[in-house]
Amino acid sequence: MTQTITPAQATTTPRATKLQGAIQSAVRIVVSFLFLCHGLQGFGFFGGVDGAGGAVELGSWPGWYGSVIEVVGAALVLAGLFTRPVAVLLSGVMAFAYFTVHAPEGLLPLLNMGELSALYCWIFLLIAAIGPGTFALDTLRRRR
Image: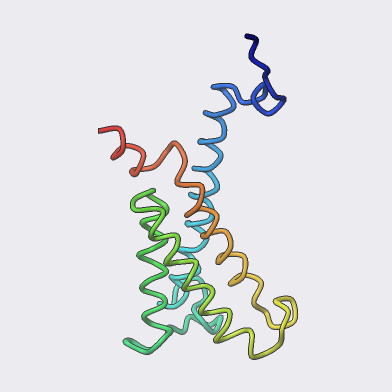
């Protein structure tokens, strides 16, 4: 009996698999670094929340707590530690931000200035679905 190889199987080589894992890691690292910078704005870094170095009030809801979740979550995803559950949490945080802050201003993200929230929401959901990639602490933990 002969085995038929589909075009998809023919293009999936060990090299392609390694490259895919490295690209997944690179995307995870870049996105989480940018998100970390976004979260640090809540504490007055990178121009702060007002562009003049202002920080959200200590303990204020949801700003301060959101910033803490963003910074801690981004650091964990950056390191590739507990990537899937943390990415789901961050996706939810961005969905919450979109629907509570941006959506009341208009339906479309382009009109309500919610593009970043929408993109981060979907990218973190994608990271949760596909995993951290090759270069992650989660990958090292699985090997042991």
